[in-house]
Image 1 (cartoon, rainbow, N blue to C red):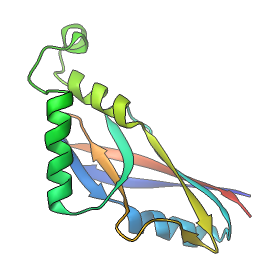
Image 2 (image 1 turned 90 degrees about the vertical axis):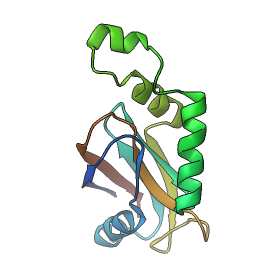
Image 3 (image 1 turned 180 degrees about the vertical axis):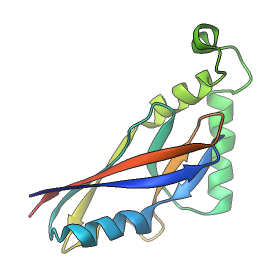
Image 4 (image 1 turned 90 degrees about the horizontal axis):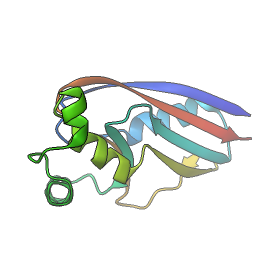
Amino acid sequence: MIFTDILEIKTKGFGDTIDITEKVKKVTEKAKIVSGLVTVFCNGSTGTITTIEFEPGVVKDLQRVLEKIVPSNVPYEHDKRWGDGNGFSHVRATLMKPSLSIPLIEQELILGTWQQVVFIDFDNRARQREIVVQIIGE
């Protein structure tokens, strides 16, 4: 069986990190699939889905590290072509990837105690985002 749902999320951009764990859990409950694989996918090129301990210190640490690895204040070829100033957003999202797969066993997401599913919006403006949650299983 395959079940698909869409999560609507409003973001602020600029590394806005949103805990979507409970929203994903609600989709698994709605699906009524007992065991399988849950894929959470961002259908945009400036956002990412990952896991993190959703705690302000860790979120700030990640933002600081990403700023060092992919600075927002340097010229990017993308910006020269499109003029939208979000070249850094595309590079960050590419490094972090657009999706995550989570095992589903006995209708429970298999996550660690301090592990939450988050969406991070790297774009340089607020956005309305759609996150696809697809479950394959039985």
